[in-house]
Length: 380
Image (cartoon, rainbow, N blue to C red; front, side):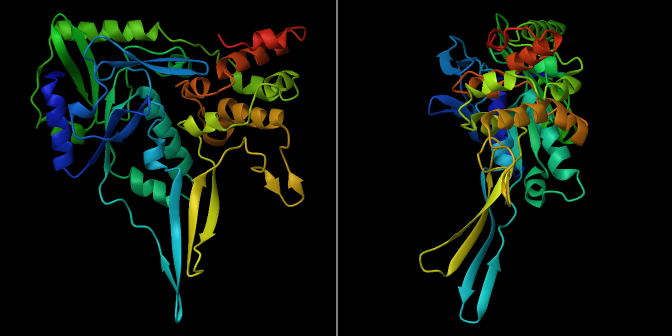
């Protein structure tokens, strides 16, 4: 493994830009850390941390110079590779008929700096759901093609993180080209680099690095171990899919429905949700029509509408659909979990509904029907 200094981050971004990539990384915007185009270290959230818990998100001054000292950005990679509003086709009326204009593929492939293990596992979910089926998602494939990922280890998980319960880790496991672990201590500010692909090795060869010392490798292990033990939430996954299906008629759904606002926040920030709808619009001259694909949510009152009515008309049926699909239905459909433990749905739910607490409450209700469901479902 290699190490590199702070200045090498600028070198890395410059190499990626010179190789034709549009580089995205974390930036502070509107009181949150978001993923956006960057040009170097000056754009990164230096010394910025985050405080996250149920229905709470705040940025804080860390008092150090860490570039990646936050737990998770408000969104993962999904908005870049699977945008919330996407033009499918534009139709223009002409004197002799109609012209169809389809959007072009992105001019430059994307490179991501700062992706976490939960983001990589969410990306793998979308690769399975959107690209590996018989009818692949063409536009997602175009954006996904050629993506370069520089992942970063988490040093300071937040109160809503539970990636370890979902088989993840603060340290990226796979799916990256390069992986960085940021170290800030008496020995200085540096990054330990692991290579995950041939492309990663080629890029790293153009950046100033040095051989990693044994003390640096030990510091990485210690930091990862501390972060692993610092998860803010846990989720018992033993027999979880069977549990969720068995709880279909649990009275606990009434308890959670009394709190749920059906605002759709959880699905919008979830890095694996993929539900969409199609919207058509025509300009005032009636000469141009556009068809857009937009994000949708199973929490919408009309999301399950078919001729004759709405299949899931109640709030409890919609919440039950969402959490059961995440923790059980994905297993049947795709052979993997629809939850990566990033905790964003807990952070951004204005009613502080906690997926880990609700799963625990359902487990408790099945084990003991006399369980106080409201107390069992309180956010931990």
